Image (cartoon, rainbow, N blue to C red; front, side):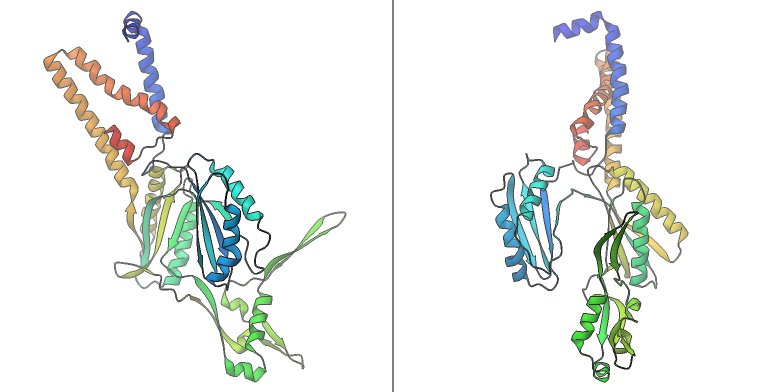
Length: 389
């Protein structure tokens, strides 16, 4: 230590160069730092989602989940495997050891799933993916007096598309409404009149409502892809669906024997704000997205939306950036007070020059920290700001 002090006393220009370097690189490092509400943590969870329409929980457990769990046993790097089987599907959660690479383990888990010899024929393809760590950033409600839920959902979807078009916003979730479905209410009297069974109606709907590929045809000049795209998403598209052809050449359509309408499922899932039905929009950020900048973009969008619309309003429920900005402001105020106190007390008891250099060292030490903070994955969050304060 004595040698270092002697060196800087002898070569005072080196001190000036170091201070300038601290200021320049510290400011650059501070601007590079991302913000998050809590420190960033890499994901250690891999999920396997199962979809098997019409299956009971026992079928999901015995025919799918247990087979996958048997192949995951003994896999190096897996800490724990848990599963949930429910009607129409299930999920398997694979927790890996903290020192393992999540991308390598994802590949290992996929290979283990692929080694299962067979699955039930009616099961949809399995979805194996790592669970991204996301953090809630901004929540708001979309509501309007006299506006029905279907309209609110359409507006919510448009808001989602607008927000996703902005850089730094990728995790947006809508809630507050049940799933949409097409209800086909078959009339028994009409079935008897046309001599049609309920099974025939169900088969006609299933066979006509398809989305599949039929391979390809290669020629010398070009290739043709064969694809059947006849899936319906709205009830009115099914009205003219042919259920049966009569011997006299006439046809019986679905609207002749059934009432078709678009509706929400009977799940009691709804949100209310100030006594009015509303759609909730939740915005989160990932490890690669900045909380403060994302929240600022959303706030600007909310202000513009409310200015343009009279009937509809966006009501902000939670903005995590407010807490972060308040704590940052507290850090700046405490730093300024600390520098003033150092200047006053050291000038009173020692001398003004010494007081100046000691006070000057406070912001320089912070800038030195900012040089290396981003490289170590440190973000501006409530915990790191607490440490700085």
